[in-house]
Length: 161
Length: 162
Image 1: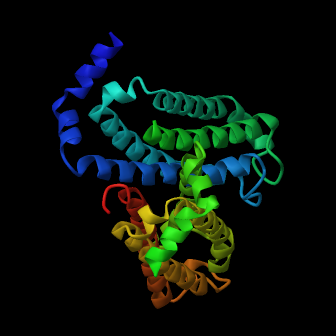
Image 2: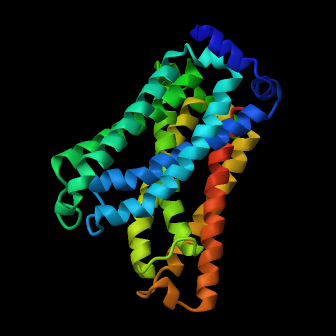
Image 3: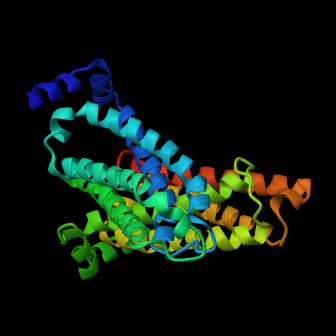
């Protein structure tokens, strides 16, 4: 069932076009790496503030409003380019351990962010400015950094596997 | 001259250690991308302010103190990991045309970043700076960001264009 879905995706006209054209894949890959670097490089500002390691003079709410729109924008580009790269060799990536681990880490990063906004951020007024965030917020920031470094590592690992 | 250097470097024990240690190139490339992330994240957040896409009450000098240290830290990580990658695969990199363009781009981007640093000296908000100064900052910011993105793209294309 899973393999049939992967084969169907890989045989879509857009998938074969990417796989067969000389320059689609390199361009998609290069843009994917830049967008992913931007996601990690911008979200790290918020994560480092949450673990009380940087930007201490700035309220968490202010910093979130500054960085998150760019994180989402860059993530959208990384998601689209990554999805197109996946389609070009779905049967290979769909059974590739580093790729599956990368997807797992992305889900964990998303769940961590959702849990932070749904639970921890509701009490943010208590530690938003001028003091170390609550332990739950620091945990969310630390986990986010670990998950995103893992995503980058797995991205490179895919290329060597 | 360069060819002799590449052959000598490639034959050193250190180069062989990088090349043949399982996972070493993979980890170095990961660290290289994380350095790029730190640099490009700081450059993006700063340059969005310099080109006027994000309004900020911060003074020019404060923007310099806030964003440039992360920019330089990212560059230091890029430089060290990049030198180790060259040491591991000197023959593949030093004679690669795309790699040479990447190095030229880095030199140009560093010059523009130093220009941004010099232009962000005043203790006044960007909106209080003269029109000419704001135009120069916007041009430097846009140019520097475009170059760092191009350098990142070139990094990937090294694998495809010799």
